[in-house]
Length: 183
Image (tube, rainbow, N blue to C red; front, side, top):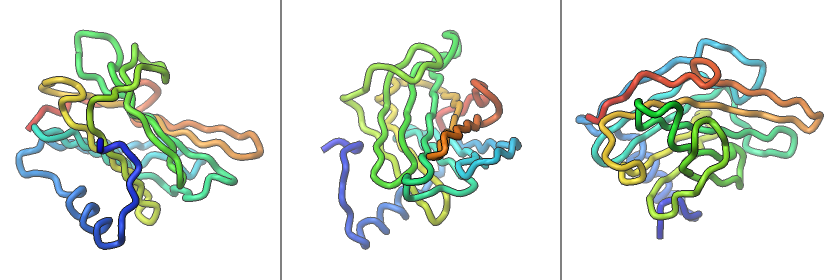
């Protein structure tokens, strides 16, 4: 079973996954990026932490207030990965919902579009923690090839039943972080 398949976990196994998933190996290169733009939305990005090591790339996003139920407010996120600084824009996008019951998908993209070809033969895992207002994605490096560094751009979106839609970009619209080298 691939990591991006839906899995039901018992409380003890979920707790074990939470503890293991939050550990960052000592040899990982880790950088944190603060979003100083305070948006009038619950899915306002506060901070993004990127850890890059030989085993995985880990992206942890902290939000102002994630909402479990999407009945009144739908929330989603897109993480754009730039693995080739010589090519303009990102090569991959991992996106999905932030409400209960939503899914996520990693795809190869051309630039900043939200469409792309799903990567089916690589493993990645997403986890939402509504109490801590965080989402964590783990991507196995073989998904991107043997890249020495990765840059990310993160976009959160939120729409309400009344038709109000808002977006928040980490560091600015279509702005990539500094490279996070593999540790």
